[in-house]
Amino acid sequence: MSEELTGTDSTTSTATGLNGSQPDVSSGALDAEALTIAGRTLRSRLLLGTGGFPSLELMAASIAASGSELVTVALRRIDPAARGSLIDVLADAGVQLLPNTAGCRTARDAVLTAKLAREAFATDWIKLEVIGDEDTLLPDAPELLRAAEELVDEGFVVLPYTTDDPVLARRLVDVGCPAVMPLGSPIGSGMGIRNPYNISLIREAVSVPIVLDAGVGTASDAAIAMELGCDAVMAASAISRAQDPVRMARAMRHALQAGRLARTAGRIPRRRYATASTPDAGLPDFD
Amino acid sequence: MIVVNGENVDLRSGETVAGVLDRLGLPPDARGVAVAVDGEVVPRAGWETFALAQDARVEVLTAMQGG
Image (cartoon, rainbow over all chains, first blue to last red; front, top):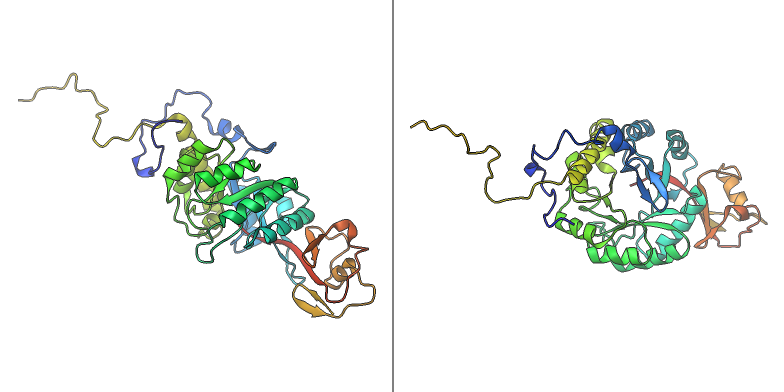
């Protein structure tokens, strides 16, 4: 782990970071740089939430533009009068489903919802959400940990939506979560990563993949997440509620690649004062 | 009387989970659907045989767009 805090502020990025002579940084190579979680390989490091899209058509077009292979769905009472099947559209898109436990307030409800999702979608992957506060939708840490432990014991692949607390992240990994999904800021707030220092600490605290979840508002937030050492980014409202969701999906895809490139390129340290990039040697004397 | 997704409906004699799905217009092999009765999962394989008792609370769930 570098001693420098990495890329917490996009305005301080530098034009000297990329060395054009380095091999294998073409976008093709980047796309091929897969992420593996619990034995499943994902070529895209963008996880997409399906909530908030004005239509299934826009959702499908945004999924295609994003390149995402793993998308979240919620479980709700069936509406026999509902038109169009979300499941069919997602099947046509060729993506894998990541059911969530959105709306659950207790470990008990989250565990039951996960089991129902496993029945409905024939997957043992679950994005575990246990919410503890109505206004901020922040996770309820004790309930989250309890539910994670129980679901891991039941054979689930548990991806927990968690606070940006490195200790809680480590505890979740200790009970068997193969990845953690810390928030950048409250769900749907679009406020980006409010505490980049904590995300860096989580990077140091756990060796499993980190998926930055919640708070992403625009492409630079996703780039910062990757620069901080996250392995993937989850975006929902940032894309689905953008004025042009397809365009924002593309922006996110590029931002993830840019952020990951910058992370692996190794940024320059921050300094309080200027450091000239042009040497003084050979400076003319005009006096 | 049973409760299906929050609505009171009369319980038919010998009605199973599959019967409730039929009422909702769903085929017995409905894709992307899960059922809980009184807070317990009823696996797909049990839909045809799981007989509902009076006052059973049935939740029939499916995929919805969500973060």
